[in-house]
Length: 144
Image 1 (cartoon, helix red, strand yellow):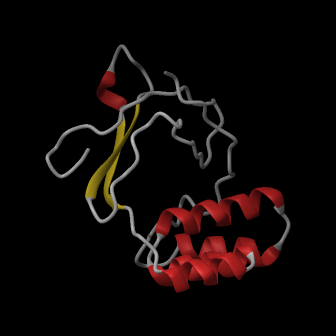
Image 2: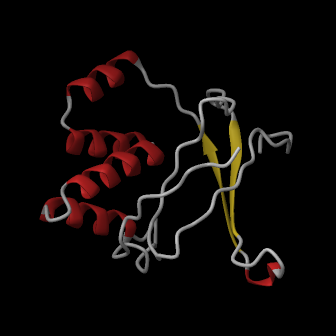
């Protein structure tokens, strides 16, 4: 939803029965975000379509940040773990978490990744202590 409270994009997708942390990729036909414009990102987990009383909701303000040329160059020459740190320093949460989750999926027994993941999610500013130890679940295909 954009600043004018108009939906930019809305979709649904089925969840697996396994509890864990999911990610999904918006399809290419989804409209792109405009740089430096504030959007409200809303998610609803619908457990029973007949009775919506148990739905779980979350929302947050998001914004597409345009990087400076020197920041882009730094990211292009950095290792994935260095990219995580750089995105964190820049306050770019989505890309930081996406790369860190991909690293954890590809190297589940690498202690530094687990430590970084837990430290990030359990920090006082994030406060997702209960979520940090949950498994990463391969999910989801957006329905058209």
